[in-house]
Length: 131
Image (cartoon, rainbow, N blue to C red; front, side, top):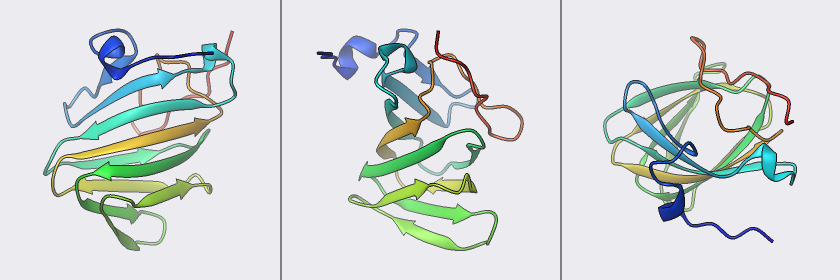
């Protein structure tokens, strides 16, 4: 059994802040936990635009606080986001998240991230083998 709190993770190597300061990801479950997925609490700064592309991962996102929009950069389609919204990037879509207000979301990645990945110039996490 694994029991963790976000307070325990804050300001540790599981607490990742984007270089531009637009988002923060508290990585609660990682690949090293050997459960087949990773689980994160991500906070996105109000007024920010954030380009992401998970070419190597499927991501499910559940928005619990805040409002904004999700844009599929492949199609140009935009979706409103608010508390209770969920989106699943099962096609590895390039996407932009715009936060009207601060957004807090819970995210699941498969395969799991190991914790030290950073987005490359295209917003992609590399696929890192869990050891």
